[in-house]
Image (tube, rainbow, N blue to C red):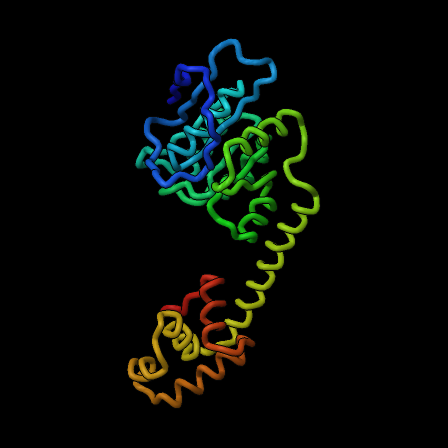
Length: 266
């Protein structure tokens, strides 16, 4: 079910360009897809743009700014309790513009990065908007088809520039930037794969000990829980470090968390 709202009255632009980041956030309301369509008389170079975002203030600020530039903006709403990534994607495809501004965190429906590939396959230029500064995440977004990644600290003026470059058929990111981000993501994935292979070397008791260390337990705590001696646990920890090829418990725990490892259920 679609609904089209006219943009707010008034033609004057705001004096300052606020950042994308807002401290006040509210869930987006209404049914989906929810489209805001520019009034008649828009410039002939107007471009259709779709916004998929979890935060109303962010989405509305971007929409109003782009509408003032003459673009036709639709925002996808997924506030319905039964909404999912699939329903958000279906709504986006029904109102999809040439440019899709996609928020990384889509609240209760999940990770927006999972929508990049299908939107790109459908012909959209996808730009991910994120709070993360993790270059691995950025590289993963580029690998999946995003043409650029925009941190929320950037200004609305940068969004306008992106829209202009997409409209004019210009690249959003240099080849070197893209290659660096993709290399970072690939390297991280290879390191994670290598570490998971090392985790498979652990015996069941060692996996249990590592799992306890990940929860903050000390060697003495683990010994008491497992009804064994502290010396035995220390010996197991030594074996764990050797098999994982790390030099400290902190490194072992950090790497295990990084690859989202959990000890097998007994």
